[in-house]
Length: 140
Image (tube, one colour):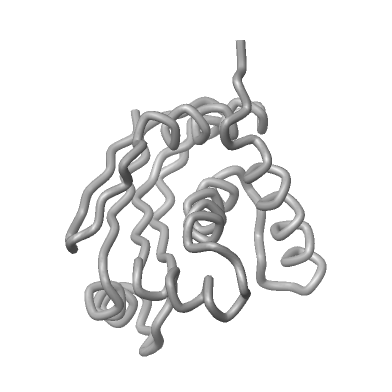
């Protein structure tokens, strides 16, 4: 099950399409969907979480809390819509594409992908691109 929670004035208008896409991404990695909660917030909200739980005093676009057990993907994914907007401008991509990248980034972490080393980060970026291309692809 996937839930979307909004701590700011922001809504994904096509939640069903995002849900279908995320479910297909999880399946494509040979995993099973458990419970995923997306919490969309602003920089201040996410900074507070970063300071309180991770002891980091920096802005970030995403913080994920992984509750995955075995092959059952579960977790809470907090996304700063402000950071996503700024990053879209910085990377010269649309807000929608950057949002998809961040949404799927957390799921890929739960699937076992890392991004701390240069080689891990390259693989993560490659996987993000691969999974973004799955958006709107009909699976029968």
